[in-house]
Length: 141
Image: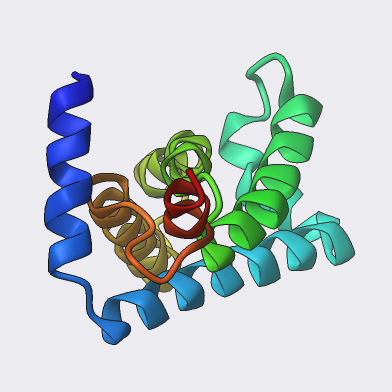
């Protein structure tokens, strides 16, 4: 496993592009803004999670979503522990896609969740890139 991650890091560092870094930063900012909007307008998140109202632990889910988006968004934007921050986002984004099929289908929310999930899956493989805190700290050795 370690050799494949090292191989992916070497490939990503050799094929780095500023556009990809801007996409990573935009993804992080988007997640941060989404997390803060969930905190400031908590009723909106409660309404989104209404199809899961019978599932135990609903309040924990609410707090996890907001905190993971805020902290993960900042970490993704600066490229700090990028893959770990992405992994924290995946259950939320998969749930956001699935919840559209359980409850009322909201096409704009489905498209945003799907696009964000695809971007997160890309950065899960690609990593933070050459212009990230991950790369900076790795080069300090």
